[in-house]
Length: 274
Image (cartoon, rainbow, N blue to C red):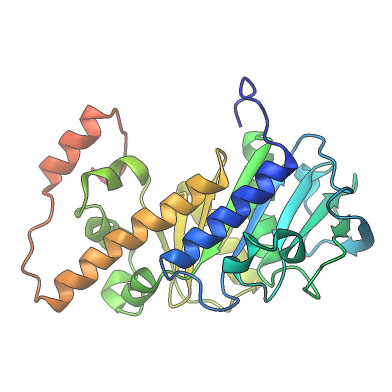
């Protein structure tokens, strides 16, 4: 997050998580308790006023780069659509200790989850990797299950990074601007597995959104949680166009490579997919 911009307060960050969760649900990318959100905050932030209850915890994986920082994380089983109206019941705050191995979990008096999201290890690993490599003091990660993107990943031909990018970048001029690094595709792996975690971290080094085949997406942003959600929305909208074209028998031409390149040139976009 740019240091010349005023840093958001915890109230603003919580509100942004709620609005972002609602938007993910608006686009049908989170059924029931699916989907989760986390934020890393690298500056001092007071959490006890919102989350007065404290318990010690061991992090699912070491995160030394996050030491002294705070993570706001959705709870397991909490519906993203409920965060906006009942944020304190759905979110926990984790203060990472100096050892980078343990932390303190702060929760509210209205807590309605037994543990943090089951995808916490995936979120934590991405935050750790991005902060360690880039020295950023803010990072947002969103896991969603957008139906059209997920459907395409059930088709073997689309489980290829080059193919999926050729497909999704051709439907709207805005897509090359908003997803200039494209979307990375990961093969199906057991959610929460070590294999999945390593592949996810590597994918999100090259891309700002990855498609977990037959499961969903994970996106990130060091600007805001809104931006991470925008990436889901742009990618899912493009996948919807692709799905419609499949259903229609492949009749639409889409944007040509030259047309996509002209948009990129106009906006100063550098992309490996041009």
